[in-house]
Image (cartoon, rainbow, N blue to C red):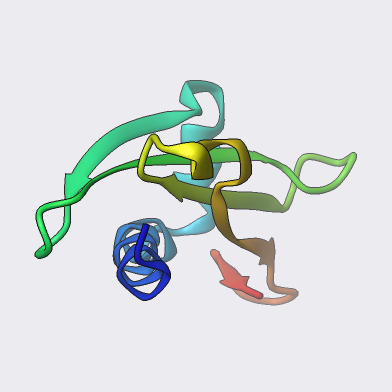
Length: 97
C-alpha cells in the first residue's frame, strides 16, 4: 500500500462527508457504515469504510471515521482519519473539528 496515495484517496472520500451539514450527518448515523472500493491512479484497489456515530451522550455531535486499506496485511491496521462535527452555539448546522 502506498501511504501517500491511500491518504489522498481517503481525504478525497471524506471531503464528501465534510461537505454535509450536521443535520445531514445525523440522518446518516443509522445507515453507517458505508463501505466501497476505489481504484487509485496506480491501479491498486483500496477499500474505504466510513463510520458515523455519536460523539457525545446527548447525541448532538457526530464523529466521522474513515479507514482505508488495500486488502493486504494492512487490512489488520487500516490507515484512519476522523473528524467531529458539533453544533455551533447561535448558528444552524455545525462545525467540523
